[in-house]
Image 1 (spheres, rainbow, N blue to C red):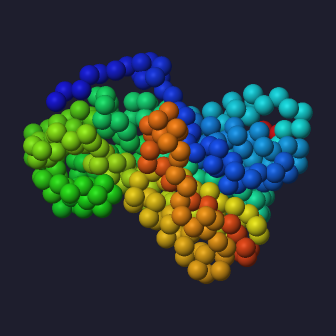
Image 2 (cartoon, one colour; image 1 turned 135 degrees about the vertical axis):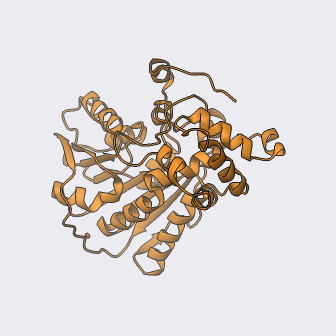
Image 3 (cartoon, rainbow, N blue to C red; image 1 turned 45 degrees about the vertical axis):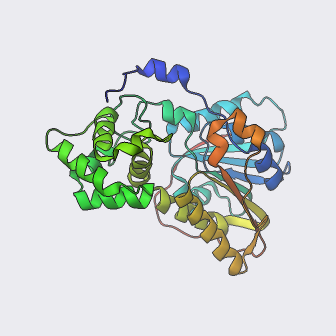
Length: 329
Protein backbone atom coordinates (compact mmCIF):
# COMPACT_ATOMS: atom_id res chain seq x y z
CA UNK A 1 0.00 0.00 0.00
CA UNK A 2 1.45 3.33 -1.06
CA UNK A 3 0.68 6.18 1.32
CA UNK A 4 0.11 9.74 0.03
CA UNK A 5 3.01 12.13 0.37
CA UNK A 6 2.53 15.32 2.33
CA UNK A 7 4.81 18.29 2.52
CA UNK A 8 6.37 19.63 5.70
CA UNK A 9 4.20 22.72 5.38
CA UNK A 10 1.06 20.57 5.27
CA UNK A 11 2.18 18.64 8.33
CA UNK A 12 2.96 21.81 10.27
CA UNK A 13 -0.43 23.27 9.39
CA UNK A 14 -2.12 20.23 10.91
CA UNK A 15 0.14 20.10 13.97
CA UNK A 16 -1.99 20.36 17.09
CA UNK A 17 -1.78 19.02 20.61
CA UNK A 18 -4.26 18.98 23.46
CA UNK A 19 -2.76 17.86 26.76
CA UNK A 20 -4.67 15.13 28.56
CA UNK A 21 -5.85 14.92 32.17
CA UNK A 22 -4.90 18.57 32.73
CA UNK A 23 -7.54 19.18 35.39
CA UNK A 24 -6.64 15.97 37.19
CA UNK A 25 -2.91 16.79 37.09
CA UNK A 26 -3.47 20.24 38.57
CA UNK A 27 -5.62 18.79 41.35
CA UNK A 28 -3.14 16.01 42.11
CA UNK A 29 -0.06 18.23 42.22
CA UNK A 30 -1.80 21.11 44.04
CA UNK A 31 0.88 23.62 43.02
CA UNK A 32 1.32 26.57 45.39
CA UNK A 33 2.69 30.01 44.30
CA UNK A 34 6.11 29.50 45.91
CA UNK A 35 6.70 25.90 44.82
CA UNK A 36 9.57 24.58 42.77
CA UNK A 37 8.02 22.58 39.92
CA UNK A 38 9.46 20.38 37.17
CA UNK A 39 7.63 19.63 33.94
CA UNK A 40 9.90 16.85 32.70
CA UNK A 41 8.12 16.52 29.36
CA UNK A 42 7.24 19.91 27.84
CA UNK A 43 5.71 18.45 24.67
CA UNK A 44 2.97 20.79 23.49
CA UNK A 45 3.43 22.94 26.64
CA UNK A 46 -0.21 22.51 27.66
CA UNK A 47 0.57 21.25 31.16
CA UNK A 48 3.47 23.70 31.41
CA UNK A 49 1.10 26.64 30.93
CA UNK A 50 -1.21 25.42 33.71
CA UNK A 51 1.66 24.79 36.12
CA UNK A 52 3.17 28.18 35.29
CA UNK A 53 -0.15 29.93 35.96
CA UNK A 54 -0.38 28.34 39.42
CA UNK A 55 3.05 29.68 40.41
CA UNK A 56 3.90 33.21 41.48
CA UNK A 57 6.75 35.32 42.74
CA UNK A 58 9.21 33.12 44.62
CA UNK A 59 8.23 30.08 42.59
CA UNK A 60 10.47 28.23 40.16
CA UNK A 61 9.49 26.14 37.16
CA UNK A 62 11.83 23.87 35.18
CA UNK A 63 10.71 22.63 31.77
CA UNK A 64 12.63 19.78 30.12
CA UNK A 65 12.36 18.13 26.71
CA UNK A 66 14.69 16.32 24.35
CA UNK A 67 12.87 17.93 21.42
CA UNK A 68 14.22 21.49 20.77
CA UNK A 69 10.85 22.50 19.28
CA UNK A 70 9.11 21.60 22.55
CA UNK A 71 11.58 23.74 24.51
CA UNK A 72 10.78 26.61 22.16
CA UNK A 73 7.06 26.17 22.86
CA UNK A 74 7.83 26.38 26.58
CA UNK A 75 9.85 29.56 26.01
CA UNK A 76 6.94 31.10 24.08
CA UNK A 77 4.48 30.17 26.83
CA UNK A 78 6.68 31.83 29.43
CA UNK A 79 7.13 34.93 27.27
CA UNK A 80 3.35 35.22 26.96
CA UNK A 81 3.01 35.33 30.75
CA UNK A 82 3.13 39.08 31.43
CA UNK A 83 2.49 38.95 35.18
CA UNK A 84 4.87 41.07 37.23
CA UNK A 85 4.98 38.31 39.85
CA UNK A 86 5.60 35.42 37.51
CA UNK A 87 8.05 32.74 38.72
CA UNK A 88 11.60 32.12 37.52
CA UNK A 89 11.67 29.62 34.64
CA UNK A 90 14.42 27.38 33.31
CA UNK A 91 13.89 25.70 29.93
CA UNK A 92 16.25 22.80 29.29
CA UNK A 93 16.89 20.88 26.06
CA UNK A 94 17.75 17.44 27.43
CA UNK A 95 16.30 14.00 28.01
CA UNK A 96 14.45 13.67 31.32
CA UNK A 97 16.62 10.65 32.11
CA UNK A 98 19.25 13.27 32.98
CA UNK A 99 17.01 15.00 35.53
CA UNK A 100 19.58 14.77 38.33
CA UNK A 101 22.21 16.42 36.17
CA UNK A 102 19.81 19.15 35.05
CA UNK A 103 18.83 20.05 38.62
CA UNK A 104 22.45 20.00 39.76
CA UNK A 105 23.39 22.36 36.95
CA UNK A 106 20.62 24.75 37.95
CA UNK A 107 21.57 24.59 41.62
CA UNK A 108 18.18 23.12 42.58
CA UNK A 109 18.25 20.58 45.39
CA UNK A 110 14.67 19.75 46.27
CA UNK A 111 11.56 19.88 44.10
CA UNK A 112 8.01 20.14 45.37
CA UNK A 113 6.07 18.96 42.33
CA UNK A 114 7.14 16.92 39.28
CA UNK A 115 5.18 15.91 36.19
CA UNK A 116 5.99 13.32 33.51
CA UNK A 117 3.64 13.12 30.51
CA UNK A 118 5.02 10.13 28.60
CA UNK A 119 2.82 10.59 25.54
CA UNK A 120 3.97 12.01 22.23
CA UNK A 121 2.63 15.42 21.31
CA UNK A 122 0.64 16.13 18.17
CA UNK A 123 3.49 18.34 17.02
CA UNK A 124 5.93 15.44 17.09
CA UNK A 125 3.52 13.15 15.26
CA UNK A 126 2.96 15.82 12.60
CA UNK A 127 6.69 16.39 12.10
CA UNK A 128 8.02 14.48 9.05
CA UNK A 129 10.25 12.16 11.07
CA UNK A 130 8.51 8.83 10.63
CA UNK A 131 6.54 8.63 13.87
CA UNK A 132 3.26 8.14 12.00
CA UNK A 133 2.44 5.52 9.40
CA UNK A 134 -0.28 7.75 7.94
CA UNK A 135 2.16 9.65 5.69
CA UNK A 136 5.14 8.63 3.56
CA UNK A 137 8.11 10.05 5.51
CA UNK A 138 11.79 9.31 6.18
CA UNK A 139 12.03 6.41 8.64
CA UNK A 140 13.76 8.28 11.51
CA UNK A 141 11.66 8.28 14.72
CA UNK A 142 14.24 10.53 16.42
CA UNK A 143 13.85 13.94 18.05
CA UNK A 144 16.58 15.60 16.05
CA UNK A 145 19.56 14.92 13.82
CA UNK A 146 22.12 12.28 14.69
CA UNK A 147 21.93 8.98 16.52
CA UNK A 148 20.48 5.63 15.53
CA UNK A 149 17.27 5.79 13.49
CA UNK A 150 14.41 3.37 12.93
CA UNK A 151 15.81 2.76 9.43
CA UNK A 152 19.13 1.69 10.98
CA UNK A 153 17.37 -0.86 13.18
CA UNK A 154 15.10 -2.13 10.42
CA UNK A 155 17.93 -2.59 7.93
CA UNK A 156 20.70 -3.92 10.20
CA UNK A 157 19.00 -6.08 12.83
CA UNK A 158 18.68 -9.83 12.35
CA UNK A 159 15.26 -11.38 11.90
CA UNK A 160 15.40 -12.68 15.48
CA UNK A 161 16.39 -9.26 16.84
CA UNK A 162 13.57 -7.56 14.94
CA UNK A 163 11.09 -10.13 16.19
CA UNK A 164 12.21 -9.59 19.79
CA UNK A 165 11.90 -5.79 19.48
CA UNK A 166 8.46 -5.96 17.91
CA UNK A 167 7.17 -8.50 20.42
CA UNK A 168 8.74 -6.94 23.54
CA UNK A 169 8.01 -3.27 22.87
CA UNK A 170 4.92 -3.62 20.71
CA UNK A 171 3.35 -6.71 22.28
CA UNK A 172 2.70 -7.78 18.69
CA UNK A 173 1.52 -11.41 18.50
CA UNK A 174 2.53 -11.64 14.83
CA UNK A 175 6.06 -10.35 15.46
CA UNK A 176 7.81 -13.30 13.82
CA UNK A 177 5.89 -13.07 10.60
CA UNK A 178 6.33 -9.31 10.40
CA UNK A 179 10.06 -9.56 11.12
CA UNK A 180 10.40 -12.21 8.41
CA UNK A 181 8.57 -10.00 5.92
CA UNK A 182 10.76 -7.00 6.78
CA UNK A 183 13.95 -9.02 6.19
CA UNK A 184 12.53 -10.29 2.90
CA UNK A 185 11.59 -6.77 1.76
CA UNK A 186 14.96 -5.23 2.64
CA UNK A 187 16.73 -7.92 0.60
CA UNK A 188 15.27 -6.19 -2.46
CA UNK A 189 16.28 -2.70 -1.28
CA UNK A 190 16.84 -0.77 1.95
CA UNK A 191 13.70 0.24 3.81
CA UNK A 192 14.09 4.00 4.27
CA UNK A 193 10.52 5.34 4.42
CA UNK A 194 7.41 4.71 6.48
CA UNK A 195 5.50 3.62 3.37
CA UNK A 196 8.07 0.94 2.58
CA UNK A 197 7.96 -0.32 6.15
CA UNK A 198 4.15 -0.36 6.21
CA UNK A 199 4.13 -2.41 3.01
CA UNK A 200 6.48 -4.96 4.58
CA UNK A 201 4.45 -5.14 7.77
CA UNK A 202 1.21 -5.67 5.86
CA UNK A 203 2.86 -8.46 3.87
CA UNK A 204 3.84 -10.20 7.09
CA UNK A 205 0.54 -9.76 8.94
CA UNK A 206 -2.23 -12.37 8.48
CA UNK A 207 -5.25 -11.48 6.37
CA UNK A 208 -7.62 -11.17 9.33
CA UNK A 209 -5.33 -8.52 10.89
CA UNK A 210 -6.16 -6.16 8.03
CA UNK A 211 -9.83 -6.23 8.96
CA UNK A 212 -9.38 -4.97 12.53
CA UNK A 213 -9.87 -1.41 13.70
CA UNK A 214 -6.21 -1.10 14.68
CA UNK A 215 -3.85 -0.67 11.73
CA UNK A 216 -1.47 -3.65 11.25
CA UNK A 217 1.53 -1.31 11.55
CA UNK A 218 0.51 0.30 14.86
CA UNK A 219 2.33 -2.02 17.27
CA UNK A 220 5.45 -2.35 15.13
CA UNK A 221 5.80 1.42 14.84
CA UNK A 222 5.37 1.72 18.61
CA UNK A 223 8.04 -0.90 19.18
CA UNK A 224 10.56 0.77 16.89
CA UNK A 225 9.92 4.19 18.41
CA UNK A 226 10.54 2.80 21.91
CA UNK A 227 13.71 1.03 20.77
CA UNK A 228 15.15 4.03 18.88
CA UNK A 229 14.70 6.38 21.83
CA UNK A 230 15.31 3.83 24.63
CA UNK A 231 12.08 5.05 26.15
CA UNK A 232 11.80 2.38 28.83
CA UNK A 233 15.35 2.96 30.04
CA UNK A 234 14.72 6.71 30.07
CA UNK A 235 11.54 6.28 32.14
CA UNK A 236 13.35 4.13 34.71
CA UNK A 237 16.22 6.59 35.07
CA UNK A 238 13.98 9.67 35.03
CA UNK A 239 11.57 8.41 37.68
CA UNK A 240 14.41 7.21 39.90
CA UNK A 241 15.96 10.68 39.74
CA UNK A 242 12.57 12.32 40.37
CA UNK A 243 11.96 10.26 43.51
CA UNK A 244 15.39 11.26 44.81
CA UNK A 245 14.80 14.95 44.10
CA UNK A 246 11.28 15.08 45.52
CA UNK A 247 11.02 17.12 48.72
CA UNK A 248 9.25 15.76 51.83
CA UNK A 249 5.54 16.02 51.11
CA UNK A 250 6.28 16.60 47.44
CA UNK A 251 4.21 15.00 44.71
CA UNK A 252 5.10 13.19 41.51
CA UNK A 253 2.53 12.72 38.75
CA UNK A 254 3.09 10.41 35.77
CA UNK A 255 0.85 10.00 32.71
CA UNK A 256 1.41 6.85 30.65
CA UNK A 257 -0.30 5.71 27.45
CA UNK A 258 0.45 2.04 26.86
CA UNK A 259 0.69 -1.07 29.00
CA UNK A 260 4.46 -1.57 28.77
CA UNK A 261 5.15 1.97 29.89
CA UNK A 262 2.48 1.94 32.61
CA UNK A 263 3.78 -1.34 34.01
CA UNK A 264 7.25 0.20 34.46
CA UNK A 265 5.77 3.29 36.15
CA UNK A 266 3.56 1.21 38.42
CA UNK A 267 6.41 -1.05 39.52
CA UNK A 268 8.80 1.81 40.26
CA UNK A 269 6.24 3.73 42.33
CA UNK A 270 5.08 0.57 44.09
CA UNK A 271 8.66 -0.35 45.00
CA UNK A 272 9.26 3.18 46.30
CA UNK A 273 6.13 2.93 48.45
CA UNK A 274 7.14 -0.48 49.82
CA UNK A 275 10.55 0.97 50.66
CA UNK A 276 8.83 3.57 52.83
CA UNK A 277 9.65 6.54 50.60
CA UNK A 278 6.04 7.62 50.27
CA UNK A 279 2.61 6.51 49.13
CA UNK A 280 0.71 6.08 45.89
CA UNK A 281 -2.29 8.36 46.29
CA UNK A 282 -4.69 7.22 45.00
CA UNK A 283 -3.57 3.60 44.82
CA UNK A 284 -5.18 3.05 41.44
CA UNK A 285 -4.48 5.14 38.33
CA UNK A 286 -6.73 8.06 37.44
CA UNK A 287 -8.44 7.72 34.07
CA UNK A 288 -9.76 10.55 31.89
CA UNK A 289 -13.46 11.34 32.03
CA UNK A 290 -15.78 10.11 29.31
CA UNK A 291 -16.25 13.71 28.20
CA UNK A 292 -12.51 14.16 27.73
CA UNK A 293 -12.18 10.94 25.77
CA UNK A 294 -15.02 12.02 23.46
CA UNK A 295 -13.39 15.43 22.98
CA UNK A 296 -9.83 14.13 22.63
CA UNK A 297 -9.39 10.62 21.26
CA UNK A 298 -5.74 10.51 22.35
CA UNK A 299 -6.89 10.55 25.98
CA UNK A 300 -8.59 7.15 25.78
CA UNK A 301 -5.55 5.13 26.88
CA UNK A 302 -4.08 7.64 29.34
CA UNK A 303 -3.44 6.70 32.97
CA UNK A 304 -2.33 9.10 35.70
CA UNK A 305 -0.44 7.75 38.69
CA UNK A 306 0.44 9.97 41.67
CA UNK A 307 3.11 9.46 44.33
CA UNK A 308 3.50 11.58 47.49
CA UNK A 309 6.93 11.69 49.10
CA UNK A 310 7.21 11.11 52.83
CA UNK A 311 10.90 10.54 53.53
CA UNK A 312 13.53 12.59 51.70
CA UNK A 313 16.67 11.22 50.08
CA UNK A 314 19.77 12.96 48.81
CA UNK A 315 19.69 13.82 45.09
CA UNK A 316 21.81 11.48 42.98
CA UNK A 317 25.19 12.87 42.01
CA UNK A 318 26.62 12.64 38.53
CA UNK A 319 29.84 13.62 36.80
CA UNK A 320 28.26 13.98 33.38
CA UNK A 321 28.66 17.17 31.37
CA UNK A 322 26.01 19.85 32.01
CA UNK A 323 22.91 20.06 29.84
CA UNK A 324 22.20 22.98 27.53
CA UNK A 325 20.12 25.36 29.63
CA UNK A 326 17.94 28.30 28.61
CA UNK A 327 16.85 30.40 31.59
CA UNK A 328 14.25 33.16 31.72
CA UNK A 329 13.64 35.23 34.82
